[in-house]
Amino acid sequence: MAKKAVIIGAGIGGLSLAMRLQARGFDTTVVDKLDKPGGRAYVREQDGFTFDMGPTVLTVPHFIEELFALERGDDGLSDNDFPPELLGDDVRIREGNSGGPRTSEYVNIRPILPFYRIYFDDQTYFDYNGDHESTIEQIHAIEPRDVEGYHKFHAAARAVFERGFLELGYTYFGSVSSMISVVPDLFRLDAVRNLFRFTSKYFISDKLRQVFSFETLLVGGNPLAVPAIYSMIHFVEKTWGIHYAMGGTGALIKGMVKKFEELGGTLILNEEVSKIETADKQGNPAKGWFTTRYAKGVTLGSGTFLPADVVASNADWAHTYMDLVDKKDRFWNNKPRAKLSKYSMSLVVIYFGFKKTDVPLDLQHHNIILGPRYEALLNEIFEKKILSKDFSQYLHIPTLTDPQLAPEGCHSAYTLIPVPHNGSGLDWSTIGPGFVDKILQFLDDRGYIPGLMDRLVTKSFITPDYFEGRLNSLYGNAFGLEPVLRQSAWFRPHNRSEDIANLYMVGANAQPGAGTPSVMMSAKMTARCVAEDHPDVQVSLDESTVAAAK
Ligand SMILES: Cc1cc2nc3c(=O)[nH]c(=O)nc-3n(C[C@H](O)[C@H](O)[C@H](O)COP(=O)(O)OP(=O)(O)OC[C@H]3O[C@@H](n4cnc5c(N)ncnc54)[C@H](O)[C@@H]3O)c2cc1C
Image (cartoon, rainbow, N blue to C red; front, side, top):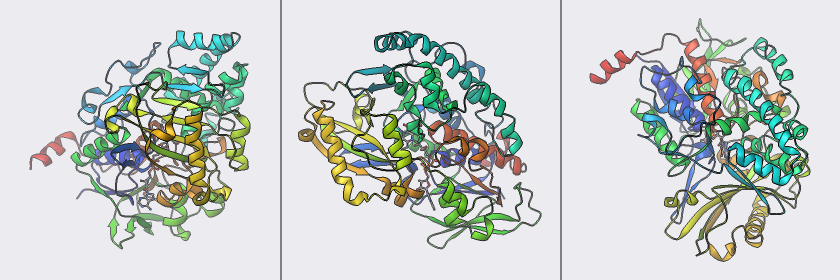
């Protein structure tokens, strides 16, 4: 009988791991408390509008292609992570549809240009599109002396990308020695300094310092605190572009579920896992430091026990260990550590639909609207945890690419505003509605969406309470543990539990971190740990074809 794997959570990381384990030969079940899969990539349907609630910027399309190329008996785990044809000196943004031969059977993925329009508070803007000439021209218009700085920044970010992403991106830091071995590289590349300082070394202009450091906010990182290793994001985007799934990110989730079910996996929705069950380790082969216990399955809120040989959690790290694991089974993943850990900021996200007029919007698919203050605002969000009077936001208008997300004559949009997590003590049930009106009024008053308040057709919003209550994320963090140096690589929760054999973590809280490409990487890294621990599970393509024929 096939060994069983149970995955807690149907986020992008959980589903990616499920596809890989099912392809390898495990009989895999994914359980999620929500009524739809996707986790942070849940889709909200409202008054005829479709809103992706979370990720909208898709990068590294070949990570998606890898998943749709899986077959029962072909888990792709031993394949080259970055095949040579994907690399080279040229920018490799794909023309037309991307996605590879199998992907297009499930989802239609397209590149988006510009990547982002970044508005400054004086309402001038920078269209960041990865094109070298246009980037240089725009930098020159803002600060001619920064053109030379950009060349140096570009070279430094490239070196970080090559070592940090292409060579080490898939390294699982499961031991101290694996971490120590890369420390000299981090210093050589100047990648331990914080990203904003790193950027400031190359640019004089405040505007350009912001343009080349804001991106980590999209994965929950404070540019003033994340290590400069994150400058690689600039190069990841430049190399493979920014992409969009037609129909929204929800269409990607639907495609992933379809593929998983075709491979033979099972998805259970509307069921919350209440406990990870363990037993004494009795000659169990799976690895785990100091482990005396092994995971034997999960109990659902309804009382049902699902037995498993492998349990993986895609849920928040603190929720997994503090709420689902018995106290006696935790040693490394303990309460003091959960208390001392730093959690990413949270968000208010407003989902709104509005009528089109004869005047087309002067906006792009992805818009960053920066406020008057950058460093001070970031400090208030991440460190002081207060709600500032000013704000920055990311305004997403997918109907500029994909009109099917709104009724005829309307746009669908969301705007996302970073705010402190619930360690702030702010009462969002009281301040939420006023805050939301202030943001929408701002978009109207400043002319980003002229007359918005009169054109609004529908609106709803989420606050940190959504992340805390609905997604079980401690303090309502929106992106998991904050990606500061002391919570990266070996210091980040381990994909293979140190406390319980056969228990694994996958997704934003595990290595390498948050963001859609990272959680897909995390799934591959976790699947490799599982494969190493369970070498007996490996169906061959031949066996699975024979089984299918029976
Ligand atoms: C608004 C927003 C915008 C973003 N934009 C981008 C972007 O543009 N690009 C990008 O790359 N990244 C973006 N991100 C980050 C990215 O979305 C996340 O890092 C990623 O989707 C997290 O995936 P995950 O696999 O870790 O799981 P999650 O999506 O966090 O899913 C975890 C799942 O576990 C379930 N769960 C929790 N506890 C239990 C339990 N006890 N029992 C059963 N189920 C449980 C939850 O219901 C949830 O479905 C964004 C995030 C947010 C919030």
